[in-house]
Amino acid sequence: MIAVPTSLPAVNFARRSDQKEIMDDLQGTGPDWHQALRELKVINRFLGGNKLTLKGIARLLKGSTAAGPVAIADIGCGGGDMLMVIARWARKEGIPVRLFGVDANPHIIKYAEGNTAAYPEIQFMAADIFSEEFRKQKFDIVTCTLFTHHFTNEQLVRMLGQLKEQARLGLVVNDLHRHPLAYYSIKWITALVSKSRMVQHDAPVSVLRAFSRKDWENIMNRAGVKHFRLRWRWAFRWMLLVQGYQIPSGKSKSSSLITG
Image 1: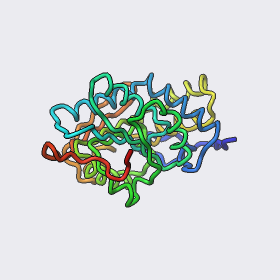
Image 2 (image 1 turned 180 degrees about the vertical axis):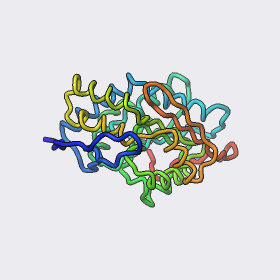
Image 3 (image 1 turned 135 degrees about the vertical axis):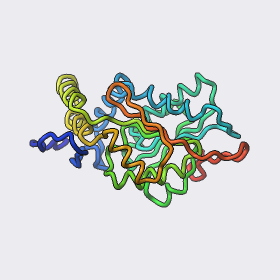
Image 4 (image 1 turned 90 degrees about the vertical axis):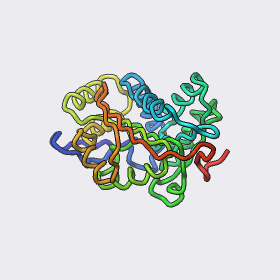
C-alpha cells in the first residue's frame, strides 16, 4: 500500500514547491502504480497534453530533411502512452519514425514494454538522463510530457543545456502552469473520480511544482537557450519549443546506443 502524507504544507503559488511526489520513487512498482499510470493516460488525453506535444513535433519537422526514420525520444516516458500517440500519428502522416522511451524506473520500463507491444517502432531504455550513458545519445527530437516539473530549477538548467545538444531538430516540453484554478480543479476532480491514492496526492502537488512564464524564462536564460518559443495552452499547459541545430541532409544523427 502506498503511504500518502497526512499533512500538506500551506498552499503557496508564488514560487515552485519542492514537495515530493510519490512517483519520484524510482523503485516504485505494483498495482497502485499501474492504476496511476492508467489514470494519467486518461487525464493527459482529455486535458490536451497529447495534442500539444504532437503540434510541437510537427512544427519541428516542418521543412526538415532526414536520411532515414526520424528518431524521437520521450524522456520520462512512464507507461509509454505518449509514444503510442506519436506512433499512431506518424503512421497516419506517413512519417517513418524510431521511437525511444527513457525512464529511470526499471519497473516502469518493464510495464511500458508490455503496454506498447503492438508498436515495434518503440523501444525503451532504463537510464538516468544525467548519466554518461544517456548523454552519448543523439536524436532528431526529444519530448518531455509532464516530466520537467519533477526537477529543481538548477537541475532543469543542466538538463535543458544538455538536451538541446542531443536533439538535432529540437525539444518539445509540455508541462503544467502553476495556477490556483489548476490546483483546486485537479484536486477536486481527482478526489471525486480517481481510484488511485497516488494520483489524488501527486496531481495537485504537480501543479504546485509547475511553472509560471517567469520561471521558464529564467530557466532558459540560465541554461543559455536564447531561441525558444513558449506558449500557454488549455488546460493550464505550457508548450516550450526549442529549435535545435540542423545537420546537412544525409548526415542525420540518431541514437547509437539504443538499437533494434
